Image 1: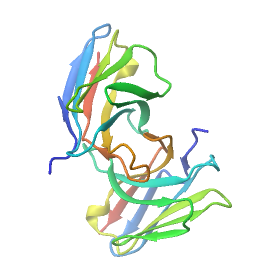
Image 2: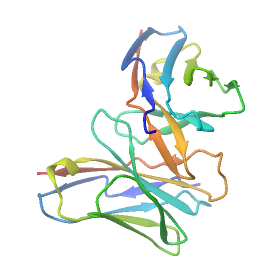
Image 3: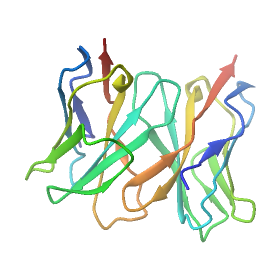
Length: 111
Length: 114
C-alpha cells in the first residue's frame, strides 16, 4: 500500500551530535528503499539506498538500517553539521520508477 | 555532467488555464517520471515515460498528461487548472534496467494557480 510514514515530523539536534530519523513502511513486499534530503527550494537529493536483502548499509557519515520484521527504516547521520539541516524523506520503490514517499522529517541543527 | 534540468523554475497561472512544464533528464538517462509535491508533503508519483510512451501512472486525473521526445526530454501538461494544482512539480530520471539505482531529481517547477 501507499503508506510510507515517519514517526516524527521535526527533529532538533546539537551540532556535532548524531541524528536518527525513523520511517515505517507498510508494504512487506517492497525490496528497495531510499533516503532523500531536500533543502529549501531544491529537489530531493539522494543520500543512501538499501535493498531488502540487507540490514545495514553505510555511506559517508550516514548509515541506513532496515528491520523487515517490523517494517522499519532509520537513517543515522553522524556528527551532524549545519549543512545537514533539511527535510529528510524515506521512499519505497513500487515498480520501476514509482517511489512512495513519506511526509518527511525536518532536521534542524542547533549551534 | 548536467543533472536533471527543469523549466521554468516558477510559474503563475489562473484557474482554468493550461500549463506545460519541461524536463531534460540527466545525461545517459532514458526514463523520466514526474512527481507533484504539495507544500509540507512528500512527492506524489504522477507518471513515468520510457521510449516515448507512458508506462506507469499514479492516481492523477486525465487533466495531467505528458510526452517524451526522442532525445528523452519530457513535458508535463496540465489542463483546466484548479487551485489545488498549486505545487512543486518534480522531474526525475534514471536508466531503464537499472532497477536498484536511485532516481535523480531536478529542482522542480513551482506552479501557483490563482
